Length: 392
Image 1 (cartoon, helix red, strand yellow):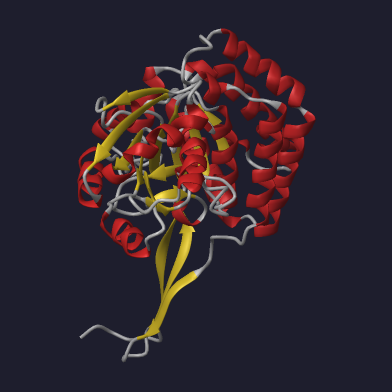
Image 2 (cartoon, rainbow, N blue to C red):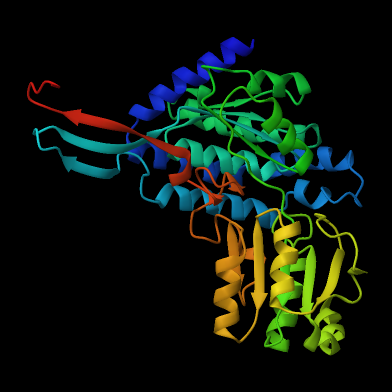
């Protein structure tokens, strides 16, 4: 079964690479329209998944689909369809002294495997980005979102069939551990694997994969309120970073406050007083994914940076200050994929970065870093043109 599915995906990827850019965009627009038209079926499937999960589970919000979220998913897909093609870009061109011409040209990876947890929106985001960039995708979602993912893939494959496109462009694997192992061992069949989920999932994929992996990191996110921070800006930024959606990877986990502003701590936390549980001087390095927040008073910006370097997952970090020198130093010295100045970390998102959607947020340093979209899921090949030159 595995070989048949993966071989079909490989064949589909070759067909996608030959497809015209306008055709890829047209199909995505049809899928976006179909998402809106099939809202009832999608939400019904999603309710079946939600019924099996405790509402107090931090993953409940990630799992839930709503009318507005489906509209946003469709809009993001439309945006991806409208973006310039990432394929065929000449990223380097030169002529050697012997007359040989070299061009480095962007091309699809081929087949991309995605292993993810209770995030049914990922199914749509991954398909849109992979399809637009000429890649086939093999998906393995979590059991929590099984009905939602099945419904999504059925809708997408129906549009593919109507558009006379190989349905192997998207494959949904069973929500089993065996399927995960099959993807991780698909040497020669799946060209790249991207895990999306918590630390446990990401570590398992990285440690067990026999195929290339781009690591998308769990978010242990900090905000440092500097001695020169603006109180009103700080209150709004901290509340937005923490409370917009507590279960997502860019949500605030730890607030650091300069000792000179400790007197303002109560006001900084005031917008969250009735919802957030504050943990003073404890649970550092923890991704809460809940209405919990670690808080620490630090002696200086030096201590804030040292604390972040020790506990950060390299995802998103923020400084709130009116001092440009402090901000520039923080942004230079803090080692993370996204480093903010007077802007909440909730903006770490492919759509918010103008990328249409995201296939994940990479915290590694080799290859893509931060929100990954079309450009980050292409590779390149060298095109060499000569006229009979021989190497001496």
